[in-house]
View (cartoon, rainbow, N blue to C red):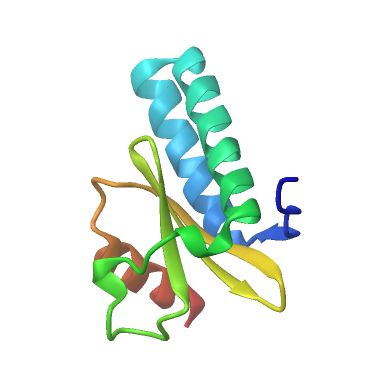
Length: 112
């Protein structure tokens, strides 16, 4: 019997990342590529919900913040998440080629 899926929340920072990703992919490759990418992201989130410990700590975050953030790859994208109180919190969805540290600094500056 498969493990039950944990509930999840997509945080505003992840929603912004998904919208930026969608805009870039549609503009550059078209709607069909976005549909495929979106399905792949949804499947990866379902996998995270079933196997939350299957991710790993992104190298860019080692020693930067608490070690309870994890990353799962979804095609050419990364999903940064955290599990708290048996809920999966999706913090970021971002292209693997983007500079994660620069993106995190930009997000922090938005919050200040």
